[in-house]
Length: 426
Picture 1 (spheres, helix red, strand yellow):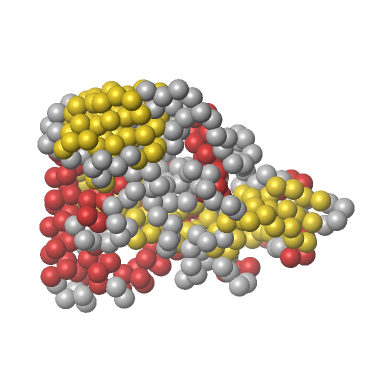
Picture 2: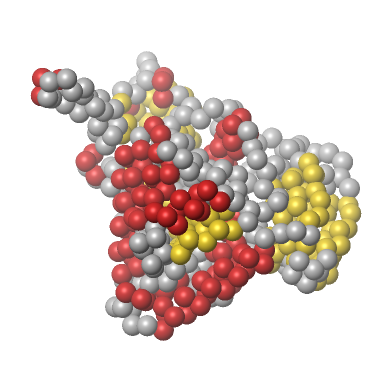
């Protein structure tokens, strides 16, 4: 899987002048911040109570935010914030959708409590399965994060499912993944990586191989169903599912497929009346599915295609080196014979002679194609599968990822950066 932009490497440390200032927030207001591109920003809570995407800020403790990070500090009752450093932009806002968001949380909390009170073998013992949908840059990831953090604060351990292969909230872009959320999500570090379940798709848009995307979504859903069957606590806590921003054509079909595959019971639609109406119409015969339209936050920032590409490159860097450049990935040299590389999809499914007259051969979306190791693989990210046999690759989750830094054709050697500690075999 290749990404444009700068090759993976540790981010450079830069310094610069900083200014300290205080911001007083009134009740139910928020401070929206975009950290500058080169230097980090320090922030602390002086008085009152405040939270970042559902996670409370500890009082009087400086929190350091890395360059380019965008976040919002919200207070229910009023707070004073101190910032030290430069920002791309920061401003306060008194119009937010937080009241409606926390009302959704309250409804989900009630459903979790009812599910927990019922026998574990009852169908009603399943907690809410929430899927968050909407166009690109509508705040889906942020809302998912809030709902998860609020639930964790109440003692639940909901499962976060990320189907957005273009962004990668749990691990690198190009994957679908799931992980239990046991504590409110750290405002800087993000989703913890202790126990994620990761399936590698290998592209940042499902249009490359929509059938493979569906297969992997089904594999992930079936694995989670097995886990829920043996864990009443996780079953009652339910799940929050984040989705892609592609909501038309094939994207809409994949959205409906995800709702059905995960047996979603709550569909939260952010910022688009048309999509909400379409979903209500197509799901009207499923009385156990609630479709709810929510306002998107005014702090949502629209990004260009180039900005998204840069964000993906930074996300990969963070995976190997950490947000603060505090990780040291392993550099390995291996012989070509030590690795077997496969690509999923491609190649004719059947010869023309075996097809009806006039029919064209179609590509097999799940076909495994062996790949010769050559310099075409240079600067690509590959997934390391738990599969013991090639035919198990599609149904197997991955152990982690390697980044190919050099290929010596004459010596038959390949040099990689490795970070193999993403998930466990299932």
